[in-house]
Length: 148
Image (cartoon, rainbow, N blue to C red; front, side, top):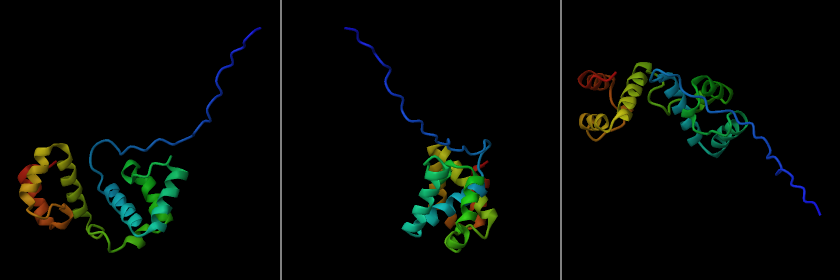
């Protein structure tokens, strides 16, 4: 009696696109704004959330975190689904690219080290969201703390 051993059956191939990394070199305020818009769009309701999820499942390998995709991918979604119009007035930074850039710099600064986060907390008082501070206050913090 002879036993023939067959190799195990092959698993089905799943063709996922890898997440697109942010460009090296630091903060991208334009991308941060797009990420914010996609997140707010999802908060508008189940239809919007499902639209983003379906887009991710079909086109982006199922990766639903907008910050894990590059700006061009987010821009395509924003245009295709009319996101900008849907979230108009819901973001504080749409009208002021300078403020968006300053907020992004401070948020990046906070992520680097806990002491830098604490420096922001010591400066800002009870309102910890940089987006809720004036441009002058943000510029003062950046100057005093030497934020890159």
